[in-house]
Structure formats: C-alpha cells, structure tokens
Image 1 (cartoon, one colour):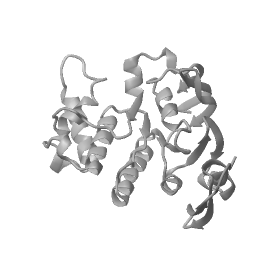
Image 2 (cartoon, rainbow, N blue to C red):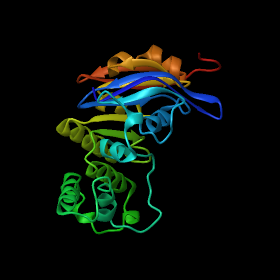
Image 3 (cartoon, rainbow, N blue to C red):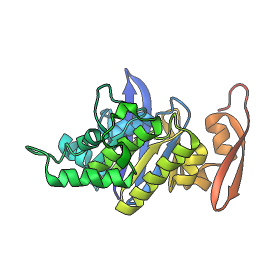
Image 4 (tube, rainbow, N blue to C red):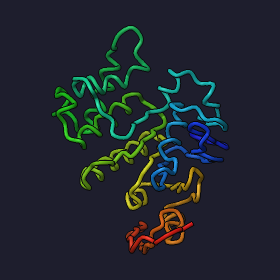
Amino acid sequence: MKIRVIDLEFSYSSVPVLENICLEVGKSEIVSVLGPNGAGKSTLIKCIDRILKPNKGTVFIDEKDLRLFSQLEIAKKIGYIPQGAKYSFSATVFEVILMGRKPHITWRTSEEDIDRVVEVIKMLNLEEFSMRDVNELSGGQQQRVFIARALAQEPEILLLDEPTSNLDIKVQLEVLDIIKEVVKKREMSAIMAMHDLNLASRYSDKIIMMRDGKIFAVGEPSQVLTPENIKSVYGVEVEVVKSNGSTFVLPLRPLRGNFN
C-alpha cells in the first residue's frame, strides 16, 4: 500500500474542514476526490503533502508515518501539482522542469538530471516548447509543463489539485491520458481533486465522494456515482448511464431548498 490515511482532521481557525478522513491508495491506482466547493478536497490534498499540518490523524507512505520524513524525503516521494499553477517570473520550459530535480541535486546539475528532464520533455511532447518562456504557453501546454516538473522529481505519488481546470475538453483528455499512462507505466499512486464527475469516472480506479469535510462514499466509479449519492451530495437529480464499461452522469435539474 502506497498511501494510507487514518482519522485525519483539520481546521481553519477552529472551524472543522476535514473530519475523520480514512483512505487507502495502492500502487498503480488513480483515486479521484469529488465533492462540491467547500467539501475539503484541496485541503485533503495539502494535508497529505504536509503543506498543511493536520490537527489529528496520520498519513502513512509505504507504512511509514509521514511525520518521520524530512522535507527532502517528502519531495522525493511526492509530486504535487497545485490548481492553476503559474510562474510570476521568466523561465524556459526546460528550466521549469529542471526545478523538479531540486530534491536530487547536490552541488550542481548532473548529467543524470539533464537526462531525466529530456526524458519527461519527450514523454509529454514538449520538445518544440522546451526553450520558450513558460508564460508564453497556453493553459494546456503549461499544465503539461507542471506535470513534467513533477515527474522529473521521480516521485512515487502524484497529488493533483484540479488538473483539468480552465482547460478545453480536448486538452482535458490529453492531460488525463498522460497522467493515467504515467501512473500505470511507473506503478505510481495518484490522488486527484476533481469537479467533473464524468472525467473522474473515466480515469479513476476508485472515487472518494466528500460532503462537508467528511467522506460520504468510496468505491469504484459505478458504486459511488449513483443518482442517490449525487442527489445527497450535490443537490442535483441525475440519470446515470453505462456505456463501454464506463459510468456517465447526465444532470437533469437542481433541487430546491434543503437537500440533506
């Protein structure tokens, strides 16, 4: 088991945001965390990466308490891609991806570091952009660069906060195809905070549905994405259909008033 979270809790200024969170993510597994705004998805991702320190509970990586890891060890184990990542300074695509090698660089950049950067540039089809300023690229191209930077770390775990936000449907599919291919090929583990139920269904091995900082349901997409669950969590009536082995959600109408 790559990741195990037990009884995780977190609060902002004494206001509970996460309560009694327990989850497991295995090798070569993609888990999507779903839920409406304010459900705690991004906070959960940040707690697992120790960007935020939980008030209670334990995160285990390969059965070792994450609190026993140094920041350098965490950087080698976990690749984190925040929502809407941007660069406020000028840097080429190559330089941005090379920054992902920081946990491995000692005194100076080695040939191995350069080789890893070239490898991920080819993997994500970024050769023609490698010497361009990252700020000149489109949103989809930038997202591929930030995924490449995370992969250059050679992590065992990917944490992605809304990896398809503000991308058109073609680029969304391209980005998620890349993530799925890399996770399976390298036998990594991935947790993605997502809004799009259908994309989560298509690309996830397992789904965690959250409501009000708690896990409401967990299981395979077909088990979690039911009309009853979606009505309870999102307040929307839907039709759920199956096609080519996948589950698809068709919204009908929002409910009025209290839907708890």
